[in-house]
Image (cartoon, rainbow, N blue to C red; front, side, top):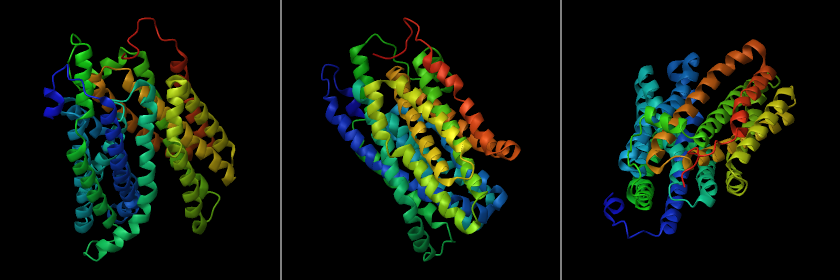
Length: 429
């Protein structure tokens, strides 16, 4: 965008109003994008089972998770070259194309097309994840955690509202001649398209390009390389202890959360009848989602107030306590619900504080590539945890699964408690 690149260095813009506008816009598009993601996911397993069969339904859902992880890299490469605005828009539009392909696959009953559609549908999730980093580009150092957490919190509104639109979408599109359960994905495609258009029109000036120009004005002799490949991103992370901690906190917190959460419905199914289990699962997972998102502004405030590392360690402690409660709850549903609530809170601590620490620990020019690598690792960690958790539970049971999940955070604790070497490029000033 010309506004970001041609303003003379001495004409330093007032960043505060740009940041306020950026966060408000991201808050709005996160709600729209959250509706788009959740309205599709809410019926995705049922639709996949109808088209591909029950055995492949889980793989179709996993395709969306893997798609979001893989798309993070090309999306952030585009951001590094052109800014946040085109990167977020392309991610949302990719998700929209995926939604359309899922609808077409349902109409023509073509399984490979369904998997391709679900893979591309992950673009919506990739955009929602990258939006949290966009909120940090121009944020004041003392408010980075709060700004990031507000964007994360906005996802809650869309996620809570979306399932209520699924029935309406399905009823509406059946009148257009679409098969049952295809309608929500058509509405998802429309929501992603709206989010992309809003960002293309209104995310001006681009926050990343503005931050990059300001950084160049403050340190004109600093390197201006903008490579966003995985190798360059990994090299940047490897050189910075704080960045390593940030990316580890995000990935490990997500791995533990997914591993335990994905098998909790199966655990509940062991003690509840078929007629009752869906209601109980809905209540327990609603509490879990509330733990993940509802208090994220508080987590962001604590991240700024107490520091990034203490909140990461607090998140890890909550994850361990959650695993202990869930693993020892037996078939006591209220106690299991408490465990899942704490699991969500622990995830929020590692996600918000880890993402904030990662973003501020690397140079502005390197942020998109590093953030894309973080989302790639996080997504693959979650997908791997979901895939492995079923085998672990079948082999050794739910209590042992929660024990292994708790043990998995030990390296993260060691990394968080490790002193930062004097002179290490720990944080960008």
